[in-house]
Amino acid sequence: MKNLIYLILSLFIVSCHSHDEDDTNAPILTITSPTNGFFAKNDTDLKILGKVTDESLHELSIKVQNKSDNKVLFSSTPEVHDKTSYDINETWKPTITADTTNVYLAIEVYDHNDNKATDTISFKIVK
Image (cartoon, rainbow, N blue to C red; front, side, top):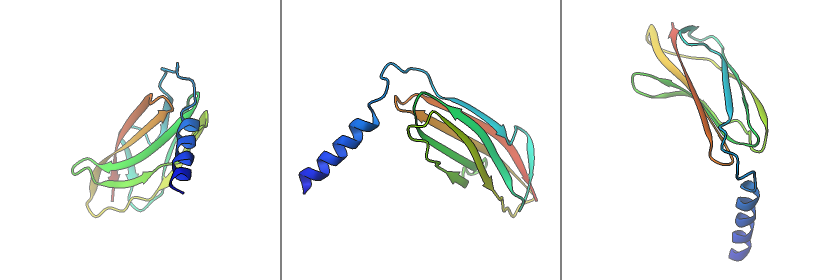
């Protein structure tokens, strides 16, 4: 049984990384919403929109964090494995207690050769 588990894990690892080894290009990441300096309203849906493309995407991470203490306010890890394109379309409803919170959206995306693209957007949430 132990050997069977090792075999399955080995096949998964080999199949997951059997992509173009010559790929040195980072994925292309575009965030269209929110924009830098945006004022989001508390308790109102905020759309996180964008697009990533690459020869073979592997992982995508989306986080909204408070700048003052780095507390994660929202996170998502959409399934992008082996896709060549992915439209980011997330909805988050901020709930804050202070009048204004400075936050940032950070998106990271990796392809199968560990090429990475990142982007951050700073915005405010107003009560």
